[in-house]
Amino acid sequence: MSVSLREFRQSSAKYREKRRGRRMNSRVPVRLEWDDQGGKRVSAEAHTRIVNPYGCMVVLQHSLGLEQRVALTNLANHSSNAAIVVWKGTSRPDGWEYGVELVAPEMDFWGLEL
Image 1 (cartoon, rainbow, N blue to C red):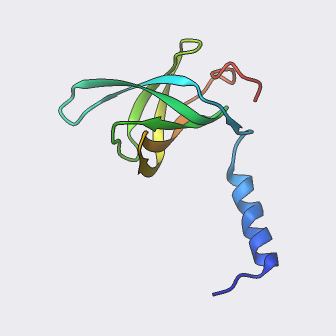
Image 2 (image 1 turned 180 degrees about the horizontal axis):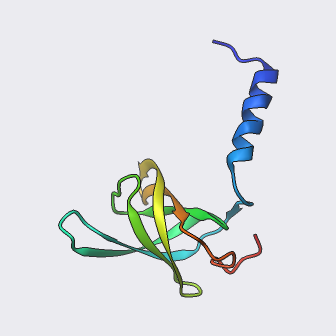
C-alpha cells in the first residue's frame, strides 16, 4: 500500500498538533514510586531521555503497566509530581522506555527553558 506525499503531510501535521509543548532531549535523574499489586510501595531511580512541560520519556529497569500511577521526582531539583504511564516502548539493555504524563504539572518542573 502506497501513501501519497499529500496524505503523509496531512497525517504528519495531525500528529504534530497532538503534541503539547516543546520536547527536549535531556538526561535528568528521576525517582519513580508506585504501589505494586500487593500494595507494597516500590521506588526506583531512572533517567529521562526526553522532557517537555507535560511529561517525559523515562528509561526504567522495572516493568510497569499502562495507566500505572506513579510519583515522579526530579532528583536534580527535588520537585515531585503525580504522573501516569501513557506509553510503553520496547525493552532495551538499559531498561524499558515509558512515556510518562505529569498530572497538573508545574511549568518549571524540569528546571529547563522549554
